[in-house]
Figure 1 (cartoon, rainbow, N blue to C red):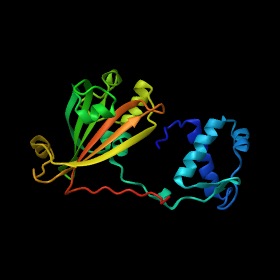
Figure 2: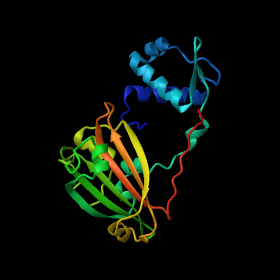
Figure 3: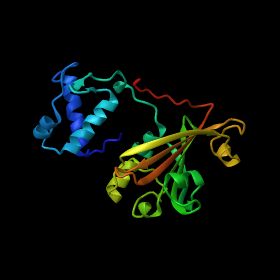
Length: 243
């Protein structure tokens, strides 16, 4: 779950309770204050408290016991692990942090998969910004950002210069939209001749294609980020608790 630079109230409450757990104010095994107590102390609504407690439970900070309440488990072992999630990285990191070459920026017809992720009609027009990322002097991945045409208006996405801020922050400041969550899909396929040439890879090596569909809190699709990774140069790793 992405927390904005000015987090919504439930995210602020999540952070406040996490700090108390880490500091020992709420030690492992202790009973967490009730919903009513949290509402009174933090001056927030019940839906805000419920959302925050759901996040803490899903992340493994607390557990619920029927008829008894919510108990503190402590800082989850996985909380310190930074998972390798390419979609999120390219949405939050500025383009200036990684050398690369802009190879396309403009209105194009949507491929079927991206159209479905944007809840748009296949072959309808959307804005595409595509870069090849270069590391150690060699192309290593191709990153494509797809978004509705109206969302690209008034932004710097058409610029040939690398963005000095992440796409999330850029769209927040220019268009007032806020990213809430990402649904990520990973597939494997063979590269096209053009992709193999752009990435300097053999045609018989498959690509890992990562699609990150970004939505706001209402579920409205905002952006799709597509990352193409030559399979012989990359591996994807994630970490999560066992429920």
